Image 1 (cartoon, helix red, strand yellow):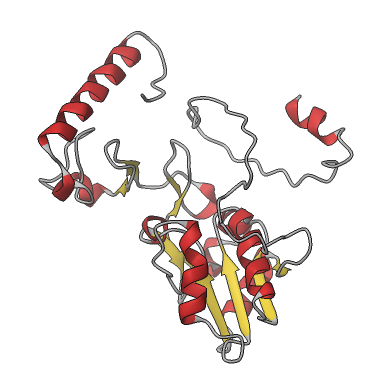
Image 2: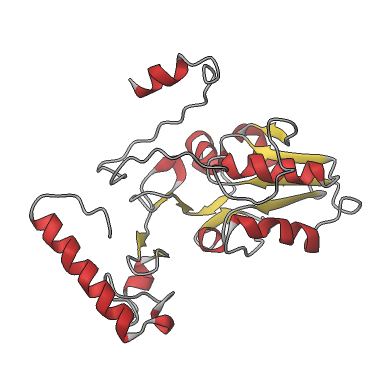
Length: 245
């Protein structure tokens, strides 16, 4: 019903809708916000409605990034890249999408890097990233259409150049080839994805810490996390879905 309403709007009639299945409710609540940018980038000149990279369908992506003169850039944040990426892709090691322009300025040169391919989770960040590169004078800039998720959905496992899991921003935490549920859980203390090996670490304690945040754990943080854990337990025991706070 929501999609029907949106697609009756002349501005959204050709909306690209993506569907994904989950065995449990992956979203705790629905929020609708008015924002200056759907993903904060901080570069007003990056305007996908005016200029953007060339879209590459998932079935053509392998051939593109396998070419030796193509530089492949993962535009996601460092913690996302850590659990999976395309074979041979470059990790900018950004903590935030806002940091990507700094990486471009310091590491890429339009005169040297003639062909650049970029990808992200669902294709949204690449709209801004490829637009920015075009504005900076890069001539051939490519963009994985539909992002990693569409690639994992459409490209057979035996042909895939994807390695690891893909982080998603919901309670599934990560997905694998074919959009099957991944192997990661979320650290409720710092928000980092934690693997089975991470959960066996002596630094892992549910709701309190994980190997990624243990070093920054203070008595005050432990106290706050214990309170959150108790609140979550109370909500779950009463049949409610924990929504944070």
